[in-house]
Length: 446
Image (cartoon, rainbow, N blue to C red; front, side):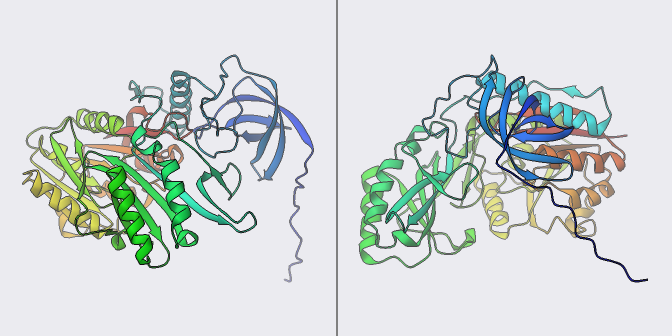
């Protein structure tokens, strides 16, 4: 039978202002209100505020809007500390005191996971908190040549835009990084390859300050000289990344020292390659590792599986307290780094393997070990495929470290379908002033 095509009805988006009342903050730090029964998300709006907004995106179940005007402000609203707040795409929650931010994040996280788990008996842990400012040891700043203005723009992404905001300082960066922004802007203006730079990553770790330049064309001799002079003047290391892959990263000069950071109150020294992932907030990272160890309740007889192990951030501290650790990571280079870190830190009971954790790993040689407990720390996309196979190991406890409440909620549901119960939940404020919520969840086999 022939089918007659009917065009889908498209809801019009107009510039007409509408008024809504914000009910709460969601797990991304967005204000949530309703218009004719439909949920509307608004960045920069706070609970109990009456606001005027423009609808910019319509979906079947919800809409997104931009804030036009605050008609009735919240008593909890404060003046943002950063001069770039109005335009920069980061630090959207600095209109709240940091303790209030943490309360909202904790509430949003628990509400989401309680709804999924249908469990009113979840043990809610005390949140892991950070100092409110100057906590970031890494940052990525973008570089763009504005052809119309004929000038280089160096900074962060503008809110609701692909354009850049030229910043002079960043209050959440460690001071050693923030003070480099102006000198870097002056350096960029002198480089012959200034139109062929993708971004610059800044890192402040125990080995020193690092600048990683993503270059799209080879450096000329003049550029090499300018970069060497900049590194010498500011007592920092420079790395170059000619390709998108972290494996392409090279030192500016052979004398550039290796990068490393301390972990677990200095007990471990972890080397890493500039361009590879490390936890942004060192103080919170140390507390997070301690909490994971506490929740797993390790014994000297335990065999532990660490999935998405990176360079050994969790694996090495875990190995000190149990019989053995197997760390698995998808990136070859990070597996090699974890192996080297184990040797350098005299950890003989940790072994590392490369594997695609989105595929069935249950038949791989390392997976045939009898594990007692599992820790996993996936990226924002979560670990839906991984948990589908994880249940085959029949471990007693799983600690899931998450950087995305939405994918944690999805994966929690999958684990509960495989006979695991969510018994403990904790919010980790890795990124104060922003809407990002990290968390830790404990699942126990029932």
